[in-house]
Length: 272
Image (cartoon, rainbow, N blue to C red; front, side):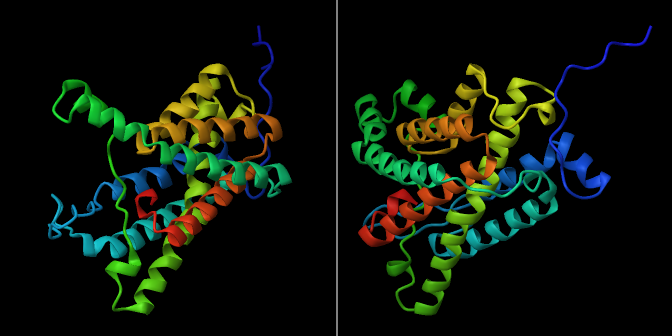
């Protein structure tokens, strides 16, 4: 007897040749590689020196002065990975709803507000840096600080270099990060939780388990745990409402743009 016909919905159409269609529909690496490259190279970046201390090389031999070059290299390699797997993010028609812009604006207010509470730092201070619980939480990324690179201070003597770095930094914040992070998180991970045949899961179909994973995973690599909890939950609601990948990217881009402008305007460099 022949097997019964599949009840799974068909994969979403992908423009282009059959090879590109196959690549975007059931291959994992185009969704994962850009984020993997970005996080791997982020691990090489040096931390800001403590106030009053001279900058020292990290375990990879990089000093704080190397940060602009490292960040630019990281961005270039991530962009290459996105280009190689472009069929994955080109499978969805480019359209953005006004709601995505609203969510992006609300999201930056929520992010900054949660960061200003400083709950993560208070918790680590209460536990004590040497406690077993604190060390375990540090393994989960709690208490980790961002590079907090201030180009107006570190590149004070080179306006052209400073402005170039700011342009590259905003390119990463507003264009590349939203594109590859939403691709991994909502294009692959959350759909993969719904079904191992993730390419057959329509974008926007979310289970409770997928929603939890879609919030917990980015909390692992964002130092601002509470802000990540609130923000990524908010964008999941947007995802369910509009079922549009580009709405999620647009909301992410708006939040990051406004956050970057806030950082530069107020000098809150710890937020990037």
